[in-house]
Amino acid sequence: MTEQRAPGVRRLEALVERVAPRDPDRWEARRALRRGRHVSASRARQLRATVKQLAAAVEHEGMPDGCGRSVKALLSPQAVDAFLDLAGEGVFRDPRRPDLVGKPLSWPSRATLRDCLKILGEEAGVAVVLPRVARESGAEPVTERQAAAVYRKLADWAARSPGDAQSARALAVVGVILDTGMQTAGMVSRTVGDVELDPGSIRAVYHSQNAAHLPVVEAVLPLRPGTVEAIRQWLGFRDELVAGLEGSDHGALWVTVAATTAGHGEDGEPLTYEAGMPLKEWGFRDAHERAVGRLNTALAGQWDQAVWGPWVPLPTTPEALRRAVDVEALVPELAEVRGRFAEVEERPPRWADGPHPGVPGFAVHGRESTYGNYRCRCRACFEEKSRRNAARRALRGS
Image 1 (tube, rainbow, N blue to C red):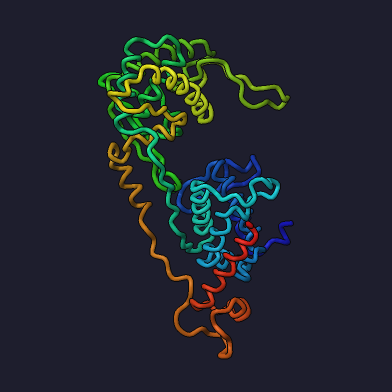
Image 2 (cartoon, helix red, strand yellow):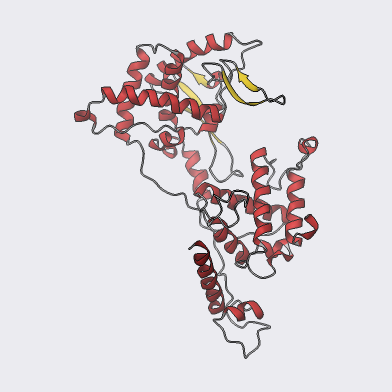
């Protein structure tokens, strides 16, 4: 199959294999990216998926003719624009999942695709001009006023000592998120050593979304007294849970409060994780959803609508809850990093101005045939080709 692929695709596959080998024995010895970092396992999967989509794209009628003959042609502005348009509409989704084919990509998926194209271009030594992928803006799930009111209620509960480990962990997690706006990846990587109860602070980390090449920002942020008390109560339960494990304390701040199963071993038996084990991202989100469901039930019954306004349930995902926090106001360094990423790149026009070498004088411009047969890239021919491609996509979707 590899021999039948377009030359540009085969070269990209070889580049990805060097920085993200499929052979587990070669993984530790993989070459670093030109930007100086090694790819993670998740980024490796994303790069392979992007090349797989490009392999499907070179055969698509909506792509420029001959775009697969080289990496430079495949990552040219015209090819990249067409590819992102088609991929964003779900044209290149896995055909083994017919329920997903044709379903538009979410903005995080589009941004991931953009990042992977940038990396592929860097590895191939090709300058790739990419459009910005703007994050979809949505309504704030928690208003600033409600967040303040919820915080006061949580601080009061923490001061009265929650009766079980799950409630104590939930109060501490919600308090830390409302104080820092930290992402899930940052939350699960926190250790007990990152927290100072006196005077009350935590070492927070932030990753720039859709920009793995940008630096991780670290900051020591103050914690409000209610959060400090919630963490103090949680640490009491945590120490008891970790004490039941064999070996030394692993140091993770957030741990499981009961034995749980996740996945299966080589023998097919479910894998069991004892109480006191570090929470991973999937477990952290699942635990947060269950705990916040309990908090919403309790808060709704005690909410004074006349004082605080209508009750809006707390979001059941950490990502939605942290949107109530102005993180960039808390961490100016993060605002600076994100500001650099948000700069609009200067993009050359996708058509050529002036004379068109090689196009015969009798050719009629503004026709798709002139674009394809004579490779004319004037504005009139380019716009007609784009209009025809859009009409074909609309027809396929009808």
